[in-house]
Length: 428
Ligand SMILES: NC(=O)c1ccc[n+]([C@@H]2O[C@H](COP(=O)([O-])OP(=O)(O)OC[C@H]3O[C@@H](n4cnc5c(N)ncnc54)[C@H](OP(=O)(O)O)[C@@H]3O)[C@@H](O)[C@H]2O)c1
Image 1 (cartoon, rainbow, N blue to C red):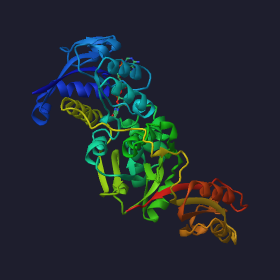
Image 2 (cartoon, protein in one colour; image 1 turned 180 degrees about the horizontal axis):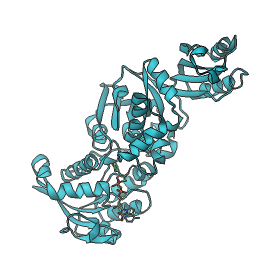
Image 3 (cartoon, protein in one colour; image 1 turned 120 degrees about the vertical axis):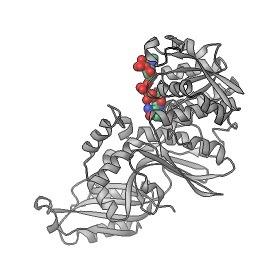
Image 4 (cartoon, rainbow, N blue to C red; image 1 turned 135 degrees about the horizontal axis):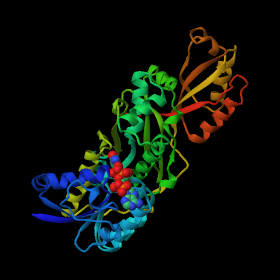
């Protein structure tokens, strides 16, 4: 039976789950993967107290763990980009394969690290860095290797999906839903990177590198967070046949790749719209196949550990097909070229002619209005009757024209607040 000697650093949520699985149930990978995985040493700054299994060899010098002659593969589960990067580089330079769950590291330094791996004839597994236990990296690297990806759209952050689901299903406001996510252990004490979209954008950048053979270029991903979404938006979206999800989107058009992550209205007819609570899902559309959708838990110690261990089994079985990154044909462009249908919400003074003026501004930019909702002012609270919310679903329009349209709308005397805008994903 093939075997692999493993060194691991990071004994937090994921690291402990990997160690538990490898030491308590080693027969699973033997029976199902034909591979014996043996944990040779663990690096933990707190020493022995950091591991549950006291028989494991623990060293407090993490650099020593990464370079040890006794291991074949180094598993990095520390997180962050500084020490983690240094340890991964040490391991690669010392001829060790590497497995990591660290999306920030891959999204930001992926190209450098893959170059170093290639120079040292070793490989890097990073299945756990996107969608936790759901094998989306494997789908892109292997299952779809004979197909050309046109676009992907994914719910890649469980915390924000939970918050949006709670708000939409139970009419809870953002702060209450966030507190609930924290109480359930789904959100970090500091959830900034989830809420502002950074986490999903890092994952989108990793998917784009695989899907479109472009560099790992997190700086070229444009993104925004779910803090822009109000209960009112979720309710209007529902009324119009949509849900609002945080969607990481990548697409290829004439050699230009756009990668982004924003709150987005998703048509109720699409599977993505049904993905609730903390679940993740990724729809990958290829020229040859059409859409394939991958659904499952996107985080949590056990699902993430499962992805880490699957990478170890793959490495023992020879690793992955070599992939060209930094294609000369496809280039990432920060300027979003793809037009989307859009949702606009405006607070409009309750005066005759206001809607006609708004329509004429849309017409000047040659943008069609596909749907418009304006509820009767008398149905609103008295304090809100001076202005009424107007919601418009437009035809497809690109970013540049959208910004121009919004400035024209905001300069109208009849509109005295910021215009809200979200994209709509309705590709079938
Ligand atoms: N949690 C998830 O569900 C999940 C899902 C997908 C991917 N990931 C990724 O998996 C990785 C680990 O996540 P986690 O949730 O397991 O994190 P965690 O619970 O915070 O554990 C981090 C571990 O790294 C150690 N560590 C951190 N900084 C260190 C430093 N400067 N020097 C020495 N040790 C250090 C910590 O040691 P101490 O105990 O001594 O502080 C701890 O053992 C991250 O890259 C994360 O993005 C996590």
